[in-house]
Length: 129
Image 1 (cartoon, rainbow, N blue to C red):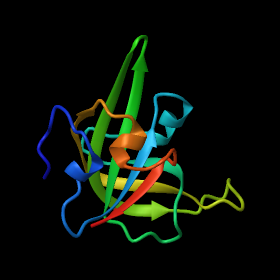
Image 2 (image 1 turned 90 degrees about the vertical axis):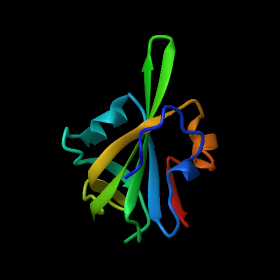
Image 3 (image 1 turned 45 degrees about the horizontal axis):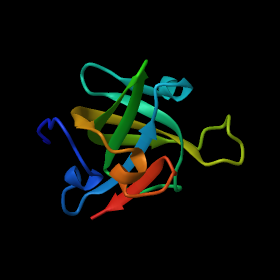
Image 4 (image 1 turned 120 degrees about the horizontal axis):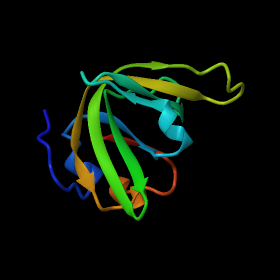
């Protein structure tokens, strides 16, 4: 289990050796309805364009909240229990829902998504160490 950190600078701070992980970026807006985190650490995040049958074990969620003049970026990590899809409402698009358990708040970051995840603007990032 990852211990809670007050500030996480990089996605690599959360990924252990030999882990297969998918990281996703979500915000406080309409996409947040596609994220459900239950008090017991279970839930889902959805409507992601993913590779068909990705070989991943863990999910990292970068959740940005904007409250008036402040921006807070919360970082979570959990175990993937299933990936469902492709979703029929997106005909011709490979969009999926990631279900998870054991999701923990690992900390926060001051880094934007691109710097944190070491990627471009794509809201999905795969890490295989």
